[in-house]
Length: 267
Image 1: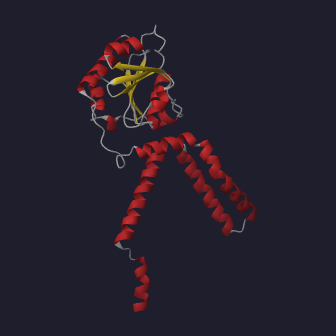
Image 2: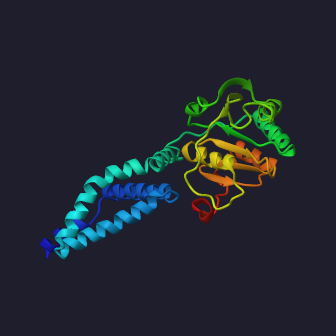
Image 3: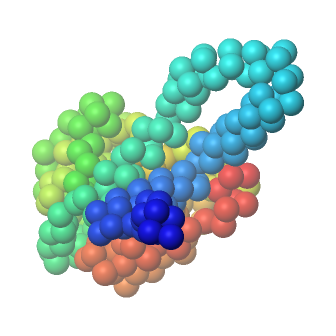
Protein backbone atom coordinates (compact mmCIF):
# COMPACT_ATOMS: atom_id res chain seq x y z
CA UNK A 1 0.00 0.00 0.00
CA UNK A 2 2.81 2.38 0.89
CA UNK A 3 4.51 1.62 -2.41
CA UNK A 4 1.35 2.56 -4.34
CA UNK A 5 1.06 5.75 -2.32
CA UNK A 6 4.65 6.68 -3.15
CA UNK A 7 3.99 6.15 -6.82
CA UNK A 8 0.92 8.37 -6.65
CA UNK A 9 3.04 11.19 -5.20
CA UNK A 10 4.30 11.75 -8.73
CA UNK A 11 0.88 13.15 -9.64
CA UNK A 12 0.82 15.48 -6.64
CA UNK A 13 2.08 18.88 -7.84
CA UNK A 14 4.28 21.01 -5.65
CA UNK A 15 4.24 24.79 -5.32
CA UNK A 16 6.81 25.27 -8.10
CA UNK A 17 4.88 22.92 -10.37
CA UNK A 18 1.72 24.97 -9.90
CA UNK A 19 3.61 28.20 -10.60
CA UNK A 20 5.16 26.70 -13.73
CA UNK A 21 1.80 25.43 -14.98
CA UNK A 22 0.24 28.85 -14.36
CA UNK A 23 3.02 30.65 -16.26
CA UNK A 24 2.74 28.29 -19.24
CA UNK A 25 -1.06 28.66 -19.25
CA UNK A 26 -0.82 32.46 -19.24
CA UNK A 27 1.74 32.43 -22.06
CA UNK A 28 -0.39 30.12 -24.19
CA UNK A 29 -3.47 32.27 -23.51
CA UNK A 30 -1.64 35.48 -24.44
CA UNK A 31 -0.26 33.83 -27.58
CA UNK A 32 -3.75 32.81 -28.69
CA UNK A 33 -5.04 36.34 -27.99
CA UNK A 34 -2.24 37.77 -30.14
CA UNK A 35 -2.88 35.29 -32.96
CA UNK A 36 -6.65 35.49 -33.03
CA UNK A 37 -6.72 38.49 -35.39
CA UNK A 38 -4.10 37.19 -37.79
CA UNK A 39 -3.86 34.64 -40.57
CA UNK A 40 -1.49 32.72 -38.29
CA UNK A 41 -4.47 31.31 -36.36
CA UNK A 42 -5.60 29.63 -39.58
CA UNK A 43 -2.08 28.29 -40.05
CA UNK A 44 -2.12 26.95 -36.49
CA UNK A 45 -5.35 25.07 -37.20
CA UNK A 46 -3.77 23.62 -40.33
CA UNK A 47 -0.65 22.54 -38.43
CA UNK A 48 -2.78 20.79 -35.80
CA UNK A 49 -4.67 18.98 -38.56
CA UNK A 50 -1.42 17.85 -40.20
CA UNK A 51 -0.01 16.76 -36.83
CA UNK A 52 -3.11 14.68 -36.17
CA UNK A 53 -2.83 13.11 -39.62
CA UNK A 54 0.85 12.36 -39.01
CA UNK A 55 0.25 10.54 -35.72
CA UNK A 56 -2.63 8.62 -37.29
CA UNK A 57 -0.35 7.54 -40.14
CA UNK A 58 2.23 6.25 -37.64
CA UNK A 59 -0.39 4.29 -35.72
CA UNK A 60 -1.88 2.80 -38.91
CA UNK A 61 1.54 2.24 -40.55
CA UNK A 62 0.73 4.46 -43.53
CA UNK A 63 4.36 4.88 -44.48
CA UNK A 64 3.91 6.95 -47.63
CA UNK A 65 1.76 9.57 -45.87
CA UNK A 66 4.15 9.60 -42.91
CA UNK A 67 7.20 10.24 -45.10
CA UNK A 68 5.44 13.00 -47.03
CA UNK A 69 4.39 14.75 -43.84
CA UNK A 70 7.88 14.42 -42.36
CA UNK A 71 9.26 16.20 -45.43
CA UNK A 72 6.58 18.90 -45.08
CA UNK A 73 7.43 19.46 -41.41
CA UNK A 74 11.14 19.62 -42.20
CA UNK A 75 10.84 22.56 -44.62
CA UNK A 76 7.43 23.93 -43.62
CA UNK A 77 8.72 25.91 -40.64
CA UNK A 78 11.10 27.92 -42.82
CA UNK A 79 8.39 28.53 -45.42
CA UNK A 80 5.97 29.67 -42.71
CA UNK A 81 8.49 32.21 -41.39
CA UNK A 82 8.79 33.71 -44.87
CA UNK A 83 5.09 33.69 -45.76
CA UNK A 84 3.83 34.96 -42.41
CA UNK A 85 6.64 37.43 -41.68
CA UNK A 86 4.26 40.46 -41.50
CA UNK A 87 1.91 38.67 -39.09
CA UNK A 88 4.78 37.43 -36.90
CA UNK A 89 6.29 40.91 -36.76
CA UNK A 90 2.95 42.44 -35.82
CA UNK A 91 2.26 39.73 -33.23
CA UNK A 92 5.66 40.15 -31.55
CA UNK A 93 5.21 43.92 -31.48
CA UNK A 94 1.78 43.56 -29.82
CA UNK A 95 3.21 41.08 -27.33
CA UNK A 96 5.94 43.55 -26.40
CA UNK A 97 3.32 46.26 -25.93
CA UNK A 98 1.34 44.13 -23.51
CA UNK A 99 0.66 45.84 -20.21
CA UNK A 100 2.57 43.07 -18.42
CA UNK A 101 5.83 44.14 -20.08
CA UNK A 102 5.52 47.91 -20.38
CA UNK A 103 5.68 50.90 -18.11
CA UNK A 104 2.82 53.35 -17.84
CA UNK A 105 2.65 55.88 -20.66
CA UNK A 106 2.80 59.53 -19.67
CA UNK A 107 -0.44 61.25 -20.64
CA UNK A 108 -0.37 63.80 -23.44
CA UNK A 109 -0.40 67.41 -22.34
CA UNK A 110 -3.67 69.30 -22.31
CA UNK A 111 -2.29 71.89 -24.74
CA UNK A 112 -1.29 69.20 -27.25
CA UNK A 113 -4.71 67.56 -27.01
CA UNK A 114 -6.47 70.91 -27.48
CA UNK A 115 -4.44 71.70 -30.60
CA UNK A 116 -4.99 68.25 -32.09
CA UNK A 117 -8.72 68.29 -31.41
CA UNK A 118 -9.13 71.81 -32.79
CA UNK A 119 -7.11 70.91 -35.88
CA UNK A 120 -9.16 67.76 -36.51
CA UNK A 121 -12.40 69.72 -36.06
CA UNK A 122 -11.30 72.30 -38.63
CA UNK A 123 -10.19 69.63 -41.09
CA UNK A 124 -13.51 67.82 -40.67
CA UNK A 125 -15.55 70.98 -41.22
CA UNK A 126 -13.66 71.76 -44.43
CA UNK A 127 -13.81 68.12 -45.61
CA UNK A 128 -10.03 68.00 -45.85
CA UNK A 129 -8.59 64.51 -45.79
CA UNK A 130 -5.91 63.92 -43.15
CA UNK A 131 -4.06 61.23 -41.23
CA UNK A 132 -2.22 62.06 -38.01
CA UNK A 133 -0.12 59.48 -36.14
CA UNK A 134 0.79 60.23 -32.52
CA UNK A 135 3.86 58.30 -31.39
CA UNK A 136 3.69 56.37 -28.13
CA UNK A 137 6.37 53.97 -26.85
CA UNK A 138 7.24 52.39 -30.22
CA UNK A 139 9.27 54.83 -32.32
CA UNK A 140 8.08 55.90 -35.78
CA UNK A 141 11.52 56.78 -37.16
CA UNK A 142 11.38 54.24 -40.00
CA UNK A 143 8.12 55.81 -41.23
CA UNK A 144 9.29 59.41 -40.79
CA UNK A 145 12.11 58.67 -43.25
CA UNK A 146 9.53 58.11 -46.00
CA UNK A 147 8.25 61.69 -45.66
CA UNK A 148 9.60 65.18 -45.30
CA UNK A 149 11.37 65.83 -41.99
CA UNK A 150 9.80 68.66 -40.03
CA UNK A 151 10.37 70.30 -36.68
CA UNK A 152 7.35 72.35 -35.80
CA UNK A 153 5.15 72.74 -32.79
CA UNK A 154 1.80 70.94 -33.10
CA UNK A 155 -0.94 73.47 -33.78
CA UNK A 156 -4.31 73.47 -35.46
CA UNK A 157 -3.04 76.06 -37.98
CA UNK A 158 0.00 73.95 -38.89
CA UNK A 159 -2.13 70.82 -39.40
CA UNK A 160 -4.51 72.70 -41.70
CA UNK A 161 -1.57 74.14 -43.64
CA UNK A 162 0.05 70.73 -44.18
CA UNK A 163 -3.15 68.99 -45.26
CA UNK A 164 -4.39 71.78 -47.53
CA UNK A 165 -5.04 70.20 -50.97
CA UNK A 166 -2.67 72.67 -52.63
CA UNK A 167 0.37 71.55 -50.61
CA UNK A 168 2.67 68.71 -51.80
CA UNK A 169 2.48 66.92 -48.41
CA UNK A 170 -1.30 66.65 -48.05
CA UNK A 171 -1.52 63.03 -49.27
CA UNK A 172 0.82 61.59 -46.65
CA UNK A 173 0.66 61.31 -42.88
CA UNK A 174 1.79 63.71 -40.21
CA UNK A 175 3.85 62.09 -37.43
CA UNK A 176 3.73 63.64 -33.98
CA UNK A 177 6.30 63.02 -31.26
CA UNK A 178 5.67 64.72 -27.95
CA UNK A 179 4.47 68.25 -28.77
CA UNK A 180 6.22 68.39 -32.15
CA UNK A 181 5.50 67.42 -35.73
CA UNK A 182 8.56 65.41 -36.81
CA UNK A 183 7.50 64.44 -40.35
CA UNK A 184 4.86 65.20 -42.95
CA UNK A 185 3.89 63.37 -46.11
CA UNK A 186 4.97 60.08 -44.55
CA UNK A 187 3.95 56.77 -46.13
CA UNK A 188 2.39 54.29 -43.72
CA UNK A 189 2.00 50.50 -44.11
CA UNK A 190 -1.41 49.34 -45.28
CA UNK A 191 -3.21 46.65 -43.32
CA UNK A 192 -2.87 43.18 -44.84
CA UNK A 193 -6.50 42.36 -44.13
CA UNK A 194 -9.32 42.87 -46.60
CA UNK A 195 -11.97 45.32 -45.38
CA UNK A 196 -15.48 44.49 -46.46
CA UNK A 197 -16.61 48.07 -45.82
CA UNK A 198 -15.85 49.71 -49.17
CA UNK A 199 -16.25 53.21 -47.71
CA UNK A 200 -12.91 52.81 -45.95
CA UNK A 201 -10.20 54.24 -48.18
CA UNK A 202 -6.43 54.19 -48.28
CA UNK A 203 -6.07 56.51 -45.28
CA UNK A 204 -8.14 54.17 -43.12
CA UNK A 205 -6.16 51.14 -44.32
CA UNK A 206 -2.91 52.96 -43.52
CA UNK A 207 -4.18 53.96 -40.08
CA UNK A 208 -5.10 50.38 -39.23
CA UNK A 209 -1.83 49.10 -40.70
CA UNK A 210 0.33 51.42 -38.59
CA UNK A 211 -1.65 50.67 -35.44
CA UNK A 212 -1.13 46.94 -36.08
CA UNK A 213 2.65 47.33 -36.18
CA UNK A 214 3.07 50.02 -33.50
CA UNK A 215 1.23 51.42 -30.49
CA UNK A 216 0.62 54.76 -32.21
CA UNK A 217 -2.73 56.52 -31.99
CA UNK A 218 -3.78 57.32 -35.57
CA UNK A 219 -6.49 59.88 -36.35
CA UNK A 220 -8.11 59.88 -39.80
CA UNK A 221 -10.33 62.54 -41.36
CA UNK A 222 -12.25 61.39 -44.43
CA UNK A 223 -12.37 63.92 -47.27
CA UNK A 224 -15.48 62.21 -48.72
CA UNK A 225 -17.65 62.18 -45.59
CA UNK A 226 -15.70 64.50 -43.20
CA UNK A 227 -16.08 61.81 -40.53
CA UNK A 228 -13.29 61.24 -38.02
CA UNK A 229 -11.94 57.79 -37.11
CA UNK A 230 -9.27 56.65 -34.66
CA UNK A 231 -7.13 53.51 -34.97
CA UNK A 232 -5.39 51.94 -31.97
CA UNK A 233 -3.96 48.44 -31.68
CA UNK A 234 -5.25 47.32 -35.08
CA UNK A 235 -8.78 48.45 -34.24
CA UNK A 236 -10.71 51.29 -35.82
CA UNK A 237 -13.39 53.38 -34.13
CA UNK A 238 -15.46 55.42 -36.54
CA UNK A 239 -17.59 58.56 -36.23
CA UNK A 240 -15.50 59.82 -33.33
CA UNK A 241 -16.43 63.16 -31.77
CA UNK A 242 -14.11 65.64 -30.07
CA UNK A 243 -14.83 64.38 -26.58
CA UNK A 244 -13.95 60.83 -27.56
CA UNK A 245 -10.66 61.99 -29.12
CA UNK A 246 -9.82 63.75 -25.85
CA UNK A 247 -10.52 60.56 -23.92
CA UNK A 248 -8.27 58.46 -26.17
CA UNK A 249 -5.41 60.96 -26.23
CA UNK A 250 -5.73 61.52 -22.50
CA UNK A 251 -5.26 57.82 -21.79
CA UNK A 252 -8.77 57.16 -20.51
CA UNK A 253 -10.08 55.58 -23.70
CA UNK A 254 -7.19 54.07 -25.65
CA UNK A 255 -7.98 50.57 -24.37
CA UNK A 256 -11.63 51.01 -25.25
CA UNK A 257 -11.37 51.65 -28.96
CA UNK A 258 -14.17 49.69 -30.54
CA UNK A 259 -13.00 47.01 -32.99
CA UNK A 260 -14.24 46.57 -36.50
CA UNK A 261 -16.37 43.47 -36.69
CA UNK A 262 -14.29 40.39 -37.47
CA UNK A 263 -16.20 39.87 -40.69
CA UNK A 264 -15.38 43.45 -41.73
CA UNK A 265 -11.73 43.21 -40.81
CA UNK A 266 -11.01 39.89 -42.43
CA UNK A 267 -13.27 40.43 -45.37
